[in-house]
Length: 166
Image (cartoon, rainbow, N blue to C red; front, side, top):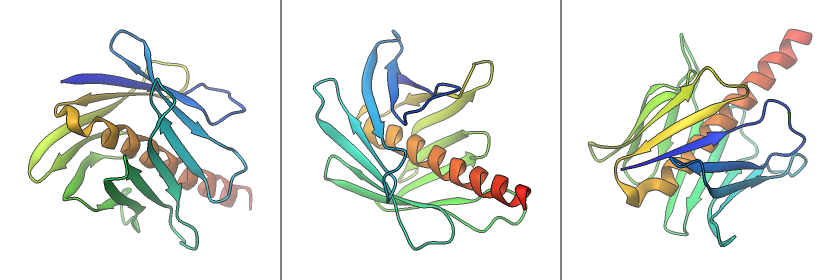
């Protein structure tokens, strides 16, 4: 079992984030660009090697991201039409995400086995996500999912904020 944290700054001009381990050591860098179209994020290890990419799929009304992990696994994370609460789905590799996405409190399940839990820590400046990975072979998938779901939520929030101004 491994525990990781993604800590977002409250105010930032860059889309770069770091993933920390339990010892608060930076183990991955998540690079993004504020003006890139389509929106794309790359997860790099300590040797600066690309381990995963998260890319916004264009030409969709609701947010959708394509996640490619180490050139082996490919997933599509998409926002569904909400009736009473946010709904997200994952296509690919027999992975399910269950729980409360809006509050970032969910489990990632592969073929019936829980491979990780994700929880948002609330008493921090900016967002901090704690990821407990039970199957270490899936750590990059878990980190990529958290980034993608956070981006989907951010786009949803930005869209809602835009309509509030109208």
